[in-house]
Image (cartoon, rainbow, N blue to C red; front, top):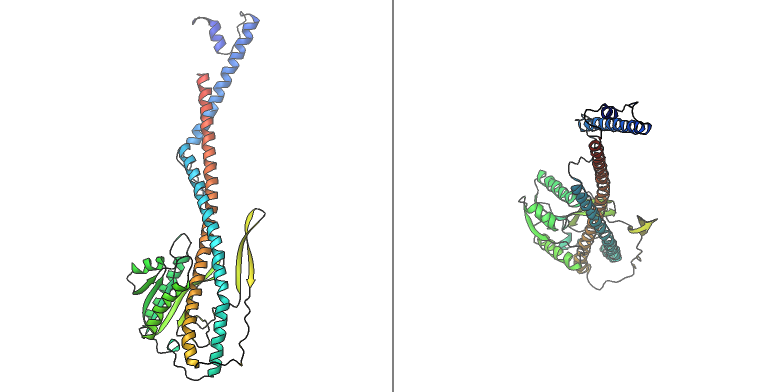
Length: 389
């Protein structure tokens, strides 16, 4: 190394070649000067870029952009958490899809019994030919008090399923209040019970729905309704439940449950038939590695009632035995359709949650990679700057 006062050392640091030096030393000094100038220029340019990047930007934030001000470790933990959540929602979606199929099979398997029961009721009514019938369940009287039966689910994570039923029940009770008609409430499902009990509604009795409604569950609700109607505590019973239409469509329906019609027609409060002529079964399959839904229409054919059939009992006694049975079957079918609608809503909700988790994971991974690259670039610049100093 040349001494401090030597002009040759100063010439080498400034990138100039001294003519007094040997040829080899002159080339080495020139190469060293070019390297120092290149390092200084790169360092100054990178410093300007970092200063511009760190300067505040007044551009508006893009909608849906992920703004993260956290370390790389926190980002890695967040990405891992989102991926684990996606696995859970995917599993819940598949479980709900399997349960929807079983609920549909339960609805379809009970349809032949309901159809034959309706035909028997129609045949008995045809034999009576408009004669007056003294059957308690068919007693039509002035409506002074209405019993509203709201069927909801026991659990959440099913989108707006429970909210739609609760709103429908509140709207119907508001209409009854506007008509100055008294009303009481029967709740089926924990969500409806919790909601209405916190708001001081007149709840007579609460029932649990469960995931697999049975005849015993329908019988318990039917007995309470039957006792209230026969004792004239209520003059009309309306059932509010979610009618299963498809995997992506369910309709909250208000059905008049009592008084029954001798023909066994199932109609809503506006007189429209709500008993579907055909049943559609939705199968969850896979096509090209992706989940797909196939629709299968099933029509249950039941033979016509023989007009030559002779009834040994009186028509009134037959109706007394058939109408409660028909009431139980209608309540059971409503519970099964409500469960199928809840499971379909849960499957759609978990599908949307999985899609959102996938999008969020992509955005977080992009942010993580950008921060990691920026950190690597900064470390390289620090090394270059240290070498130049």
